[in-house]
Length: 248
Length: 259
Ligand SMILES: Nc1ncnc2c1ncn2[C@@H]1O[C@H](COP(=O)(O)OP(=O)(O)OP(=O)(O)O)[C@@H](O)[C@H]1O
Ligand SMILES: [Mg+2]
Image 1 (cartoon, each protein chain N blue to C red):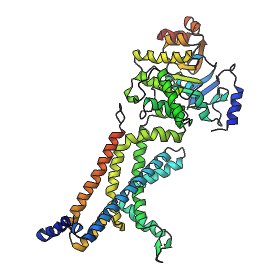
Image 2: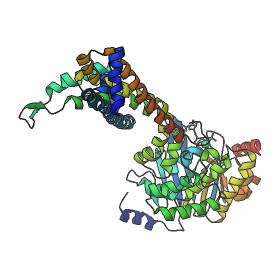
Image 3: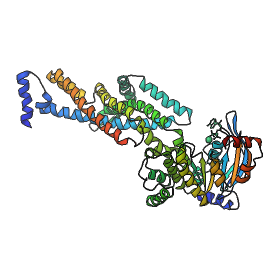
Image 4: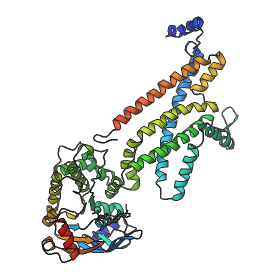
């Protein structure tokens, strides 16, 4: 393994292609951490945005006008503004209003860190799209199927859980997959508030080693692999969920 | 769920000599349009009642009122002595008593035939899974679909799907079964298999209310015929008289067109 890494030092000496993240253990370790931070950020935001989508779609079916309006307002706000502006808004505007707490070293720190704000803003950003996606899926479930559940004694919530969601999910999986892929790509914005994900780490490395082209190439390939993997998993899932004898 | 004492009380008021379904002066409006304009009739336990009438006369609406899928504006509907449109009504208790089968089957396409039959007793009534499974297997046999337990609705013919839908309703052990034009979407060959299933049920003493265009079947199976037009019952009677000498001009005209 060490020989493999050292080959890249030789490559640098011979050709000037400087992949410090391979032969330099310090850079390597921070890039590995950045990689896992990206994955961690993506997974948490994926999960939260799906939850936000489900709850939002449920609330949109509410008989209360104001509940529906608030959800609609949320969707409009997050769909019609750039995600970077949203993140700055959360971190700088809301973040400055947050109370501060003494940390273990006796320094005053905001209760919500840049990590928290990145998770919150990205989840709400992707969640807004998920609400719309789930709602269109729910609307695709025939009213008569819902009625059949009702006539069997299902309550609104139980109908939603056992009948509407499983069917709606299948309808909206392709759109959901698109949005989740988008979300993974958008996690790079967390760079802007110094969350040490891959782009941020790459930036740190190239300011030390002045190897911007190498790092950018690496980043591009890393995302090709990461997103490719996600797409692959989602496609398999889509196939597994396909109903025999049905179009969806 | 309402308290068990309440359920016991309403059940105590119903005795087999009283109608299991009692419909009295029911009015139903959709906006300005009055679909039901004072419908009154009773169904005794074990009876088979057929409702016929022209399209748009309110037949489906009537059935849907009976299991509270749509609210009524006036009048009363009682099932086993329980007022259906009482705001305090425990809908689950009602829907346990009343099974409904639809024209478009409306099976849950993401579940197999057997799972469709098992779902409600497990998820709604919280019954023991093994027990429900055993009962569901028996019901599949009863509707002559043994062997198709693991097929998804999309893999079944219309007639087969409709029989699964019947089994699914029966799994709740209802007192009354409502059938809303359950053969209207089927091709002629498969109509028969569904009708046979319904006849089996009727012969076992299940109370049935059918909306149907199958006049031959109605004549054979019904204890009572009702003809609706424009939201009222125009004529009723035992099938023999009803078909042989209809009194009302509208009934005559309708039967003339359809027979
Ligand atoms: N939810 C609703 N909102 C508004 N109008 C409705 C609604 N449901 C039914 N109607 C109207 O009520 C009338 C009666 O409908 P219903 O479905 O009960 O008729 P039907 O006798 O079952 O007819 P068909 O034989 O065609 O099934 C129709 O004119 C229909 O358009
Ligand atoms: Mg109808």
